[in-house]
Image 1 (cartoon, one colour):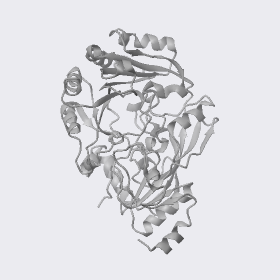
Image 2 (cartoon, helix red, strand yellow; image 1 turned 60 degrees about the vertical axis):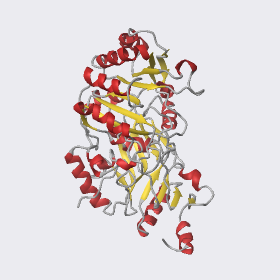
Image 3 (cartoon, helix red, strand yellow; image 1 turned 180 degrees about the vertical axis):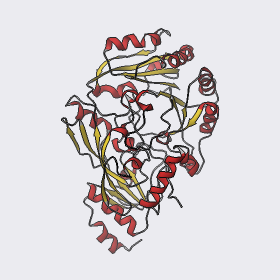
Image 4 (cartoon, helix red, strand yellow; image 1 turned 30 degrees about the vertical axis):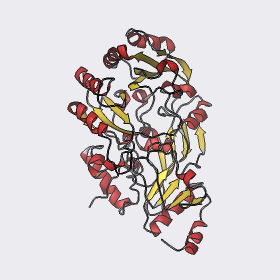
Length: 457
């Protein structure tokens, strides 16, 4: 590292603030939504704009340092020890073009802000369940959204990418450029995205909400949902979640301490048609909660009601070719109220537009998958403690039906972020293509605080 005088000169190029360990503001700047794992860089650059990002990458390259990126910290997978952290949280510019149905979003824009901005024009982004998630990070992971079966992955709707690569060069990528499809689906392996131009969809309202069944009806609700998903149109995307709610004041009293199955529905259609479609689910029996309704799209985050406060978590997942009755029963037996694996289990129905090939070479594979099972646990108690044992146990239960996993839904548990885990997130030819491009554009693996694609030898 250069001496302090040289560093002061280097840092003068930044418009945004710069922080080093022990300095005021450092701890606040590195904090993110994920509290179990935290970046501990030697330098944090609070980027105010794209030129700050470019200068930070150039600085890192000059000093032989690796680079991590954080906007909100939701998807932190591998924490940096040393190196440079570029915080993009200040880059929150949003520009909507209603004529072309597009949005240009800065690297720090959160989903809720984009939903609100697009709604003023009768449009909606292909956002996920949480309004506090960063749009760019979510999209670089593929982007499995609330209406994914109707519109496909958010990554498939990207028009342009503004990217700073390891050589400190600013690039604008479009479909047809060799890096365009590589960046989308690889989660930050090829550089720092400073902005995206995204396609929007003409959705003003959505019929949705939750049906929550108490423990005696959880099993029947799971099986009813499994059979029901074979009958619904592409305009309907749903998930089912099983969990035991903690007995704490933050949880509604009716749910405290209960093991439940919660079915979440998002339907791009009329309330009348939505009511008809969900009738087989309501026929399961009494619900602890039933708030299905027609709502403005700006309220769509209430469908999942994701936690809005920073907390600790780790997660694994399995992408399934099919969800048989036996698969569902085995999963419920392992993770249910009398099972041995304490976890939040979330099963997402895929298919529809998600099964169609990308027209721009987006690096999201397993498009023949029917479901993805996410398993969220408490993280290992300390760094270096290994991957939570529950992760391996659930994956073993689901192994007969598993065709891969989604790198976007691997949260924390960075001890397991090895080459084999990353390879399993792609088809072999996709991984080979990405590794070759990594060798070309990031040969020293500057961008490695992620589910890392290593440069091809």
